[in-house]
Length: 518
Ligand code: AHR
Image: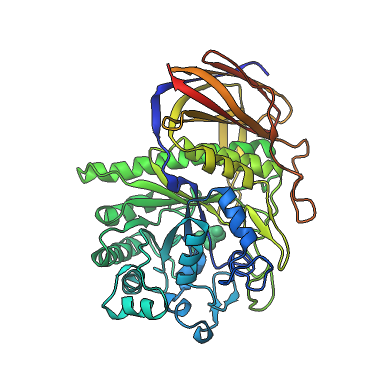
């Protein structure tokens, strides 16, 4: 491949990465909660039943904010079932995942778990089968200090201090026919507005996210965002986006190109949000909460419904996607897409955290291990703090068609001139670092990379590593947890403010530099 050239300048920034960009998601789904983060009796569990091995990996992953309790689950959830004495909590049918929920784990346990994991809790309210009244009661239960029936109920339940939960999602994927009590944009817009008003009357410090489209492939996409924001604009700070990248077509080049459609998706939603602002003559800017994103296709719902396990099991083994090397590459591309929109994407949640489409897997009573996608996320979350710099990328490209079925019908997105290099540079001025994230999407050719870092002097290499495996189908399992893992990248050379490196075909690379202003 010819030289691939990148130009960045210290003074030309896109925006600061908000710590909430590095969030994840815990849903009552399969073994995410039960047998994932919560497993009393596990050798590493603490006195609250939280698995210590999982907590350790969550800290290593670097996740910052955690969305809970759904997802599709939340649209049928009665939060009252999950608080109070555990022995009195009801078992319920969960229509989202055709399971039984014991309600052993609920809001208070989740908040405790977040404190142990050192992450910010983020709650979604049920705007499917419930409404603004249930939502404002939950806010009062969680955040009101004391002296009212609901705040005193929390205290009676053993949580004296308010939880002080700031970030709330107004329902989940309310445009999707798979959702309990799907809505039209007008129905949802009105319901979300009324819920938001009451929730903020209880606690004016809340930050609220309205539901955007479940994906860019929805027939209602675009119009949904416009109508929802026209209703909710004055009452919310964020609109949500969800994307699951797929390789249904077994077409690796298109799969690796697909994160570029996340760029498009983000830019389109920004345009719609700003158009609504313009119509309202408002200087307010709605920020984006990309509160579900990942690779997911092998274990995805099909037209025959979700029932892959018979009956109404508790914590079934569902959505246990085993991620391979190429998934990690597409996933890394998605990380770069999020970083490069740090000016408007102020929150994002990897869906999900443990066992169900997750970077962390567990065996009941046994080990916990890192899936391939763990590594790009940990790189982004731990090293992607600071100001993202604008990067001019001069790379050869390729054309392809990305297959993304819509309502189980064939649907292709043509993509032209997809650059082989997907790239982001993040400058941490306080810490004196620049970190480069680079995805080489060429499957067979090494990439000679040249990066011109204008405005920096005295650049030195701190560390560099890559994720690469000649077998794109390589996976990590309980028995071989280290098949895919980062290794040192030795090819980085620095001369003044210029850097060169040779990137392996189909690889994810991270280069951490110490850098002072020129
Ligand atoms: O993350 C899995 C599911 O995907 C969520 O429950 C839902 O919101 C989305 O469709």
